[in-house]
Amino acid sequence: MTRTDIRLALPSKGALYQDTFDFLANCGLAVFRPNPRQYEATIPGLPGVSVLFQRPSDIVVGVRQGTMDFGITGLDIVAEKAFGDDNVLALHDALGFGPCRLHLAAPEASPVTDMAGVVEWAERLRANGRSLRIATKFPNLTGQFLDQHGVDNYSLVTVEGTLEIAPAIGYADLISDLVSSGITLRDNHLRPLDDGQILASQATLIANKQALQQRPDVLATARQLLEYIEAHLRAKESHIVTANIRGESPEAIAAAMFEQPHIGGLQGPTIARVVGREGLDNGLDWYAINIVVHKRDLFAAIRELRAIGGSGVIVSPCTYIFEEEPVRYKAMLENVLRSA
Image (cartoon, rainbow, N blue to C red):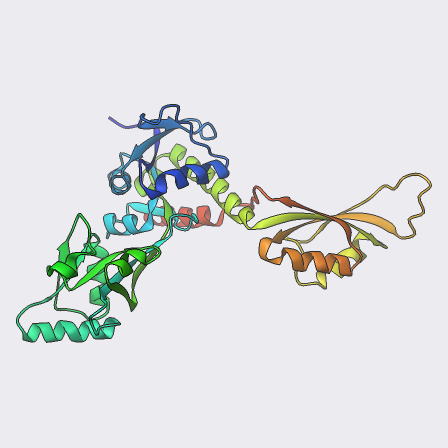
């Protein structure tokens, strides 16, 4: 029986659970879950979409198999569980939260510090009649990385529990594990290899490609998700700046602003004449200008506005910046149509 509902899978627990809730709320897509024990919820901003809570790895499996249309989970899980399967499409792989990296690590006592040393180590072990053993929960990504670096004498030890103890108790020589701060590695006398990063990961929005190709309602939902997400992420690092400036004309003021490096706005400033109080001698006319400024450039922009006569500068948070069409939506369309 063909499904007609639209399903979005979110993490049911773990580090990404609350961060995903907060992120969607900041995008204007707050999740309504009246009972924390329920495994189903809604997003009022996306009517018709059912939210289901699953383990991070199950989210990828559900999207791959088509029981879920969309999901948010870590890129590390996506890359491992959907390895070689192009039916799982990453719509946005940089949602800005849940950062970590998949990295090879060796015991501190080992002389090996980089991948060249790993290659040599594997060859020495070959001469002794055994292979280099790597404990990991990511066999696909780890094996691919080792192959790319010319390590051909290795065996992967798939582990479900704690990895850091594997070298100490002797069933692995290296580990391939997720690293955030690196404290856990140091506490267990391990260190990441200098060039041993396999993957940089953060929260990722994924979709079932077949559903996008065959269901217009799923495609429309993908656009809405990307519209809100991209508009929020674009605005997150920006401020709206308003100021009053005296000048001969809007064109003259704009020309003065364009001479400065930080106050040109997105496509240019919005400039409107200020109507002064009756009897007030303005000399030059007053104009109000509005621009969007990146957070890192805010104080430089204020200095530049003052330098060209700006006053009464007001800075406001920016909630969304919508473009004509989301860049990632266009990329998704190209991928979907090319594969159809």
